[in-house]
Image 1 (tube, rainbow, N blue to C red):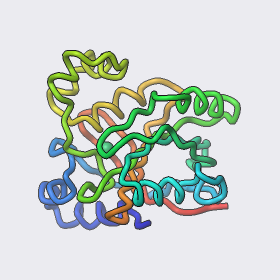
Image 2: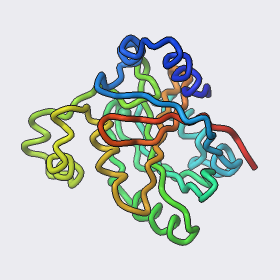
Image 3: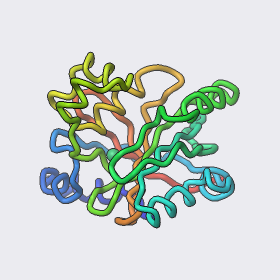
Length: 210
Ligand SMILES: [Zn+2]
């Protein structure tokens, strides 16, 4: 599980962001930034919570080749105290709003006084970064998913790909935080970033804490 912020740091130092985005099949309209303040992952969140642990989600996404949505509870010190696994999707498709993930995470966040951080997994060839997969015209026209309606209203789909649009719309309202995780286990990458406006995503290093 390598920290994707290390790659972001060397890319920003080299100044060739376009090639980096192409290499990892990332949304070409993204702008990258790095904030050196780390995001912590508690032992419970990393490995001490059975199938809800980050390590378990990472391993299952690698072995089953299905994408898994998840959510975490992040505290005021920017430490993720626990993760919660959502309903497994298939390669390239998953939905945070399937099942009870968001409602359980909202309850947990309110009880713990924390905020929600969303996450999902990527397949081989796709980095731990918002991907270049686009929302199809059919989906925009015919989908009944609530998130598609929000994205349509935001208008972000004309400039950005699906991951950015979805995260931007999903993280607008409390108790959501701007922090988001993408795991690309086939590429051994784990990344956490803040989703900003106008395509800006700000990576943070992550570290295991107690
Ligand atoms: Zn994605």
